Image (tube, rainbow, N blue to C red; front, side):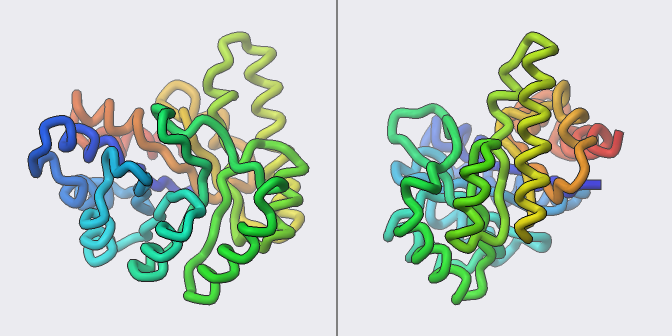
Length: 238
């Protein structure tokens, strides 16, 4: 069974909407781990729209499973990662005006700078994943820059409403994952996955982990975090 890393960004989104100190992402992380999830993911954005630097610092001290820090490949964020020492860094593209991450990194375009930053993080003992489209050229480029892992972007698959188109996207995800494994990289997937569409992706072979956030936080608002996480884990087993 693949592992589940829960992205708790939107617990912080609710907090920031009022500019107060609740709900606390750290408390949410504790509940997520107690419910059986295998890791915690947070995205520290340049504009600090949800997760704050202090959240990352406290999470590093309190997370008992594995802390995955999503971030843009900027000098500021690299410095924060080196100081905080998460278990893994996932490098993602970031746009100031986007509501959520809209696609994968163009590793081919950014390969020179990425290779240096990947190496710098690895030298500090931090595993590095690159968030990419299910595209063979991006998989190959990720290998060339030395990534330990790739996270395959599942957003397009999740948006498809016609079964044939959905199956085509699922096939692309499977092919990209297989190619990455053959090159010696570990493989995860995420973005847009929810209680209705996760089972088909979880049934693919070779995927180590799924990063899921919004749908779990949304479900938790109705039934509680413990039940929301356990229900997702059951679907992933299915």
